[in-house]
Length: 481
Ligand SMILES: Cc1cc2nc3c(=O)[nH]c(=O)nc-3n(C[C@H](O)[C@H](O)[C@H](O)COP(=O)(O)OP(=O)(O)OC[C@H]3O[C@@H](n4cnc5c(N)ncnc54)[C@H](O)[C@@H]3O)c2cc1C
Image (cartoon, rainbow, N blue to C red; front, top):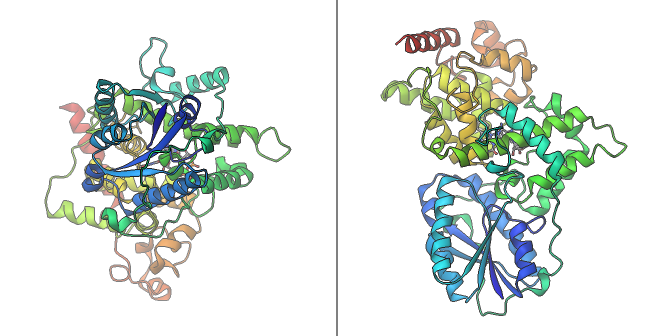
């Protein structure tokens, strides 16, 4: 039997259910990747994300080639390309791991119908999450809308299931198909219409494993305290690897829990706090699977004030936010980190999103789109879920009246301004006392710091106190209507 393994967001060999099943059931396998032309054309993702994906594909192609099972790729609409490749290669079955994004579900159904009509078997597997939406449910059997309840059931399920981790299939090197199919090298970003940019997080399965090991030996030991401080190496930076499946969530959870059995100093609280973040990831995946309308708009209508009307003022504020020129150093540092590196620290993602929605009163959906285009880990479920959390429109959302104070957040989590100075160099010489609110410097202090407010660094584009009052007044009026 000849099987095609269609790689998508699972660009690895270890703990890869579709690949393992194909190696068990087929005599010959053909690994395939399809560059989704309509998606590439839509530019929903940006250079950082596409460059990272190509790096992962290079690594995968190299490893498969060394085992004598080269990766084939095509470019076009996957709903057309997959059936056409499968028929051309006279394959009997196609194997893939499931994807829960509404557009991917539609695509997969189309491919499945087409293939089954032609007598080709389709086998799909759970991989991207540890538990799918129907495995962690409420007592009455529906999807859970609150993270707390989801988390509790997730942990119960984990204790009962203890999911196994699959090794790289031993038979893989003997499964190379003999069919005369050419396998050109993975294209460069410019061939796909994207710019080549430095990839700050090393792509590929081997780098994912290295990063996981490093994290488990080091930052995991102080994760509960360190994860909120953007200036330090406090979190795993594995998000792009989870996004493209160069590391399975099962492997990550297992490695974190195993670290507790060694003689090292890791505490259960740190390990559980980190796994809880991976549960947020699963929570948002199941929200998207159960309520696909969230990809298009709010989960629920809330009393949140309407966004600012289109016009010059809105455009001015939006541009300043995107470019990191708001006059709020922690917001500007975050946006510049995002623009320069394709990544932003989680705490700062929350601060910048809250500022955009509640201080600037801009539509959260334009922020969501901007993040998708900039982030190396751009992921519909996690991005949408978090933006809806910040906008207080999600299933489990930040309370509507809670508005982050950027200066207080900054003082708490970047007290010496190390993170701010890294990304906002014009504030480099500003004292730690003024770094969070440089507009409060006297003219003499500005002169000493070599930073004139309004010239070298912008004055705040809105007054936080006033913006907060206006937001809450508008929300109250909305409730009274
Ligand atoms: C407005 C906003 C937009 C976001 N957009 C994305 C996105 O497009 N893609 C993305 O992967 N994450 C997104 N996040 C979640 C989070 O910021 C990143 O997952 C995290 O910063 C990645 O860093 P890390 O790998 O060091 O995380 P760690 O702290 O090491 O956490 C481990 C893993 O858990 C998952 N995770 C952590 N926090 C969250 C969270 N709040 N929600 C969902 N999963 C989480 C990630 O897969 C992460 O790699 C967003 C958060 C906010 C507030």
